[in-house]
Length: 257
Image (cartoon, rainbow, N blue to C red; front, side, top):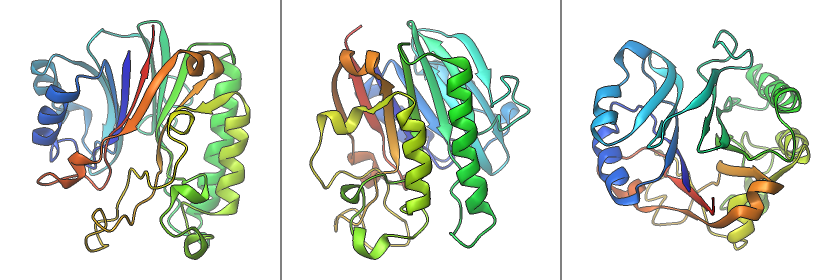
């Protein structure tokens, strides 16, 4: 089973890229963040033409999450409350092929001195409660998406200079680590422990991809049960170099099921 995550930064703008990438990569499941489209305008027909069904929640020009699957869905829920009224455009969960998948677009936080930063930290706390209430650590569970945090020094291109910035701040590290301690394994790092792997390059940084000025903020984490079934993981940097790319690129993990 191949599972991928991708912050599309507007699914309508990225449909040509998605069509090309899905045809080549053929994941069983693709989780999207920042779809930035209301539900009535989500390109479901175009997605179905590519061989995928989709479940999604979005809003105009902001947020939005979706799960694409070649195998259908069970137990789809939205947001912390399950019905989509509480952070429904940032969290979507579904079961595919017997695997529970939780796709999150964690708040970015803006800056450490912004009121949006403590909101981000509280969001991780709520997520820990969500996992504790709904799942068990032995479940076939994968948590993935844009976490908006680079957890380790090797996950940013300049850890000394960037420490304390949003996305690489000690408070964020503690909040994320608390969720991880519930029972998650960083599937990508399990297979690729070396530095230099990034999933995000800021548009504003000139030649950032070529210069290696990236961040690893997009993640695929699983329970110990899923880690034992994991056979590989990769970041596909190539789509970030294509025409009209997102500022992120897909992350992929494979499991023997």
